[in-house]
Length: 398
Ligand code: ARG
Image (cartoon, rainbow, N blue to C red; front, top):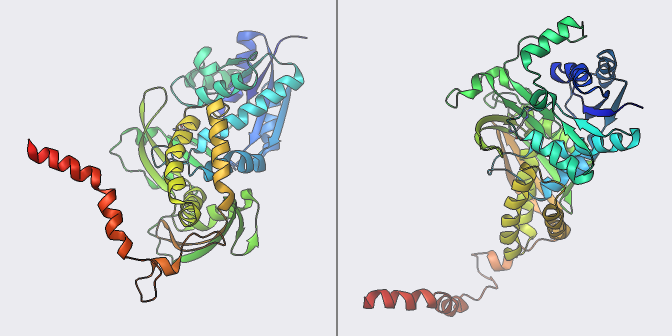
């Protein structure tokens, strides 16, 4: 049996040409693997047939939408994960999942290598290869575009020469990666950080200026996981799909930022993630209601580390796994309802309630009958600020 390589296949130009290119350059048989993470668009069976037509010895489609939502997105929701306080890790979450399936297929079909269509300038190459090596250190990763000089021009020429069945889609200036958690858009006019995103950038969201009336949605969480929307039970995947539609109509979830890539480059990124930003807002606010103060403060530090690790491609690292254990423990009280108002690009929490609530009306109220003994505050402040007072006296002596 000749050597085999399992290629992460999207159905697009680069990975379609990548099949023949890999075979020509390495002599390996190519197995194409297409993973459905809710990117939508083309029918997966059509994509599978195209891989075979492009010369793959086998082509496999995996519906990983629920797995993605349950095992990759939900941990990030529980971690309130936003890279640089803004990016909900859309692409960073899907890469370790795809890598996991690459490894599973390679192991099952006796391939000694895997391949992906990333360039040498981005984060995704790091995420794929770091994940693969963490799961199967003996597997070799190949990136045709980066390692085998498969440029865009060469890909187009190769496809024409070999009559590959690739639709030359209308010229899209953007590089897009999407899944159910959101959509990432780069390049083209966006490479000028001053140039505002045009209307052609958006797909998951309508204009926030469309003038729709406000819409309320109630999200029920159980242990940090959304389990019902407006009282109707949902799976995590259904919650995300539903909120993408509802929040997307109000233009919720548009993000425009300069991002620090792991490889050292600053890049201009546009995202749209309506469900992600709605759920993250709601989840974080529910935590505010139920987490003891110091736990909430400490968790916020851990969340930053978690988001950085995942952004940097270390999903399967020991540190990430230990942080997951901590975060999981924090979620045992994160159950209850959050009401969110969707309006004009915003998802604003307007109500929260929980059987685990630490909010005590009698302590918080400014009305008569409160149970907080204000006379204790005076002594508390005296002792609390004592170190500052002593230090101030020393300053005054100098
Ligand atoms: N910059 C984002 C990230 O590193 C998005 C990457 C999108 N990938 C793509 N091939 N367009 O996670």
